[in-house]
Length: 221
Image (tube, rainbow, N blue to C red; front, side, top):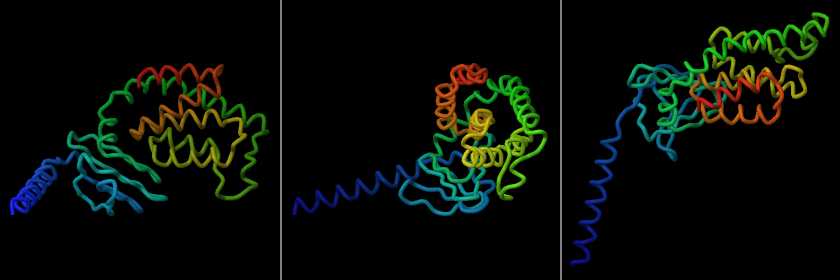
């Protein structure tokens, strides 16, 4: 009899503790826009998001192919997660609070001329002809991908630069695309991915001018 009472009491305490924990999980943001398939929830129970849905601190956020989700945090800042990503909401929120975007904006402005200069140099070497025009319509050039970055459309820039790198593994502008992709990831608050990409960049191109800028950005992480 005492054992049964103990078990019952234990179950009541456990359920009460679980309920209090669930109640105390505060909302850190809301879904303000999404496209395609976007999900959110605890790690083993993700569900399709709805507009104005609360995002709790223990949620994971996941996007499918050709999808994105915009979250407006409680302080008014926003993060946009591009396609094929899975990240904990608390990490994305924490990244959005860091000042690394402002600290790297000067560097981004300085390297713009380098990236454009390398692109123009390649055009001259090719006689002004875009070779990929003779291939599949789905091929993308660095110039096209970089134009999205210049326009501040970091979701499209991220997807276009990733596609460019997949399609052009030996392209002379590979390093420029790799570096710009890292800058996009910073703008999208995907700092862990950006840091890893910049570290790889420095390892692959240790003597390149852009590596100096990559190391300067890494110092801000």
